[in-house]
Length: 106
Image 1 (cartoon, rainbow, N blue to C red):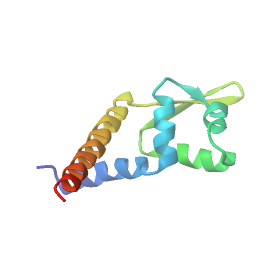
Image 2 (tube, rainbow, N blue to C red):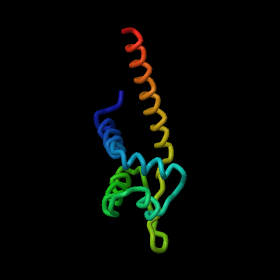
Image 3 (cartoon, rainbow, N blue to C red):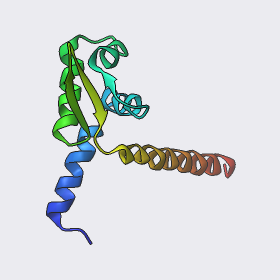
Image 4 (tube, rainbow, N blue to C red):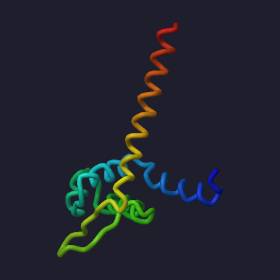
């Protein structure tokens, strides 16, 4: 069993991922590093909003950045974080199956 402190740390990382835009950013970066201009161009938000989402991911250790001429380049710090998406998809699929079984029994 994990300690409460470790659970708090894990919870903080999960909270950083717990926003649709941040999940989309992580998915975008799954394909490799991207300049801020490309990340920002993916969304119809102002630069400060996208920058704030990147900052949350960066503070959690999910994303890192480096300066390249006139742009910041972002990348996943630990690419295996996207493995989490597969687990979430499995939970969704399981929930759908359970709902279908319940509907069939009616």
